[in-house]
Image 1 (cartoon, rainbow, N blue to C red):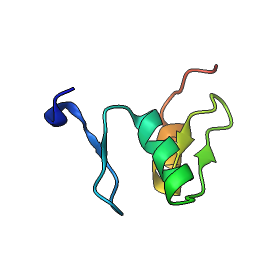
Image 2: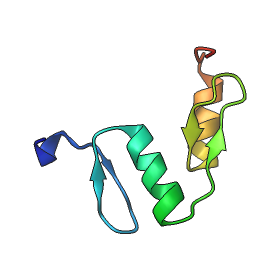
Image 3: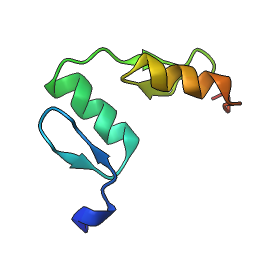
Length: 62
């Protein structure tokens, strides 16, 4: 995969990921970061700001 296609970057170690899910998994496992979830659809977030932005927009229930 081309490194330019990886759009999620870890601020702690600079590692890049092509999907948000891989980025979240890295943050949780490597940096022991708390993961927040949407109560409606279960999508995971590493910051409360991102989670709040998500819940203000209509999300798809899983």
